[in-house]
Image (cartoon, rainbow, N blue to C red; front, side):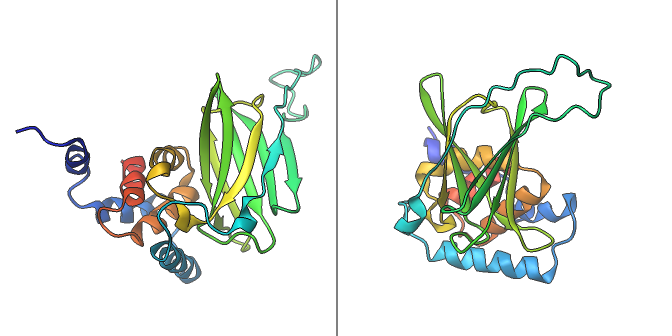
Length: 221
């Protein structure tokens, strides 16, 4: 009997998905009551969410980040720890986003975002749109509250370098749907511990069979 593709994907997932999702807390600090409450709020907002279309038109503002070509410093060397790092920073007060891009070694790039103001809350997504080789792709960064309450997110990825032109925008977490599943899986895989835990909290609030939940589980596998 031929198993339909979507059934095959479902059958390939861990038998107890909840175990995989809950496993998060073992590779990072324990989640305190405040973080747990934030996770519950994220889940509630996601369950009230739409079908994947963009919501809240005020959040559709776009921040353009130009490609940045860094010239190597002739006087620097591997032993020269005083040489400045190649870091690109850009702030957009209208969008309420501070964006940072820097090399992370092994042909990887670190993307860090900090959100301020009233446009975003924990569980919302910073969408990084990039054109590579004539193809357009998106990189998703989930926002979570750090120790001092600042909304932040970070990924380390090979999907882009310092030289691509980027467009940064905000997506409500509840707007994620079937059109974002591949990007969600990639985002989970390139997130650091805090980001993976944030994605797990999102997954915990979604029902079995939800495509975003399945995409998160695939990234955690």
